Length: 411
Image 1 (spheres, one colour):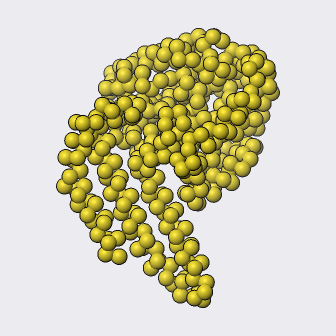
Image 2: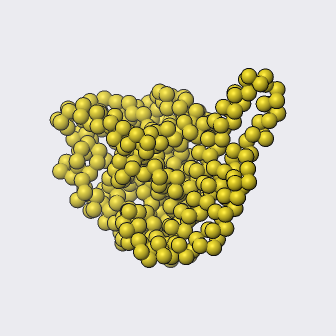
Image 3: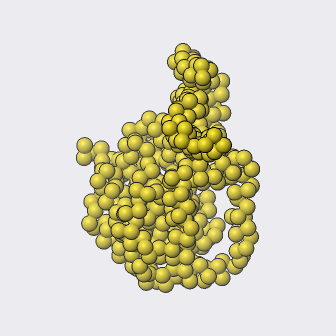
């Protein structure tokens, strides 16, 4: 017990005495390498090292004090059990201890960095958490966030934006694959307590009408507190499969929600990419055939009404939080666009234009405002290639510069 108390005390004492000198020396020696590994997600290697040392002290404190705190908390229950059954109390205490530790650890960048298994191979939830939590560590006059599905990530390169505008507005990319309009609400709730001035989204028909898709975003971001709003918006019409039940279980048991990122770290990144690789191999190489099959799952109905209601709620929260919402009326590969019912796109554009007319905080970039993208600009049916991304990012940089000048003039 003395050791479990002494270790945290020593850790915080050493951090207070040596934290800044170690961070300064580490940044002097390894700063350029740390920034390269950070891939543009932070700007100060010295601050990054210092805060990771603080994370170490916090994790050590939790690991030492939780075993001390839980046995007294469960002692009343333990005394009522027969001696032969007290292993039940020990097992429950251990299980609770691990889950509480998981909650504490998940609030540190260091924990998520330990789950990093390489660029392009790390679990999407771990990537999201690393980027989300590093937002607090970037000093900038303004902050912007890219929200949405992998289309938003493919269209806009936040590194290019930060190279050009980073001294005025720092952009963090927080996409999550498969996200639709409702997941935008959940991701907005997940933003850290920092002043975010701009939210950027690239929207296509998939956000509202793809009834065949199931988003992992629901699995990782949904909780009990979201149940009421989910059904109020019309979520009873959504095909969630097991995602909703698993999301609630993960909300109650943090370790359950972390099972996939932990499996990727323990078993290797290949284990979590296996299902995606199998899916990719099963796809037809004929894009026209794939477009026809994919288009069959797009339809208007109660589920699209739910997604529209969700986007309206998302826009309302952005307005209440005094955040400018930049909405790009985006598209798919024209091969898929031609396979879809034209009425769906007309309906989406009419909805977004109506929403922008009602909400002064929305800057709507209509389809005629955006750079034209042809079939040759796409790697597949949904994601543009690097050259198209560079062109589109340059366009968004121009939009952001105009916004900054306008907001600066209005202050």
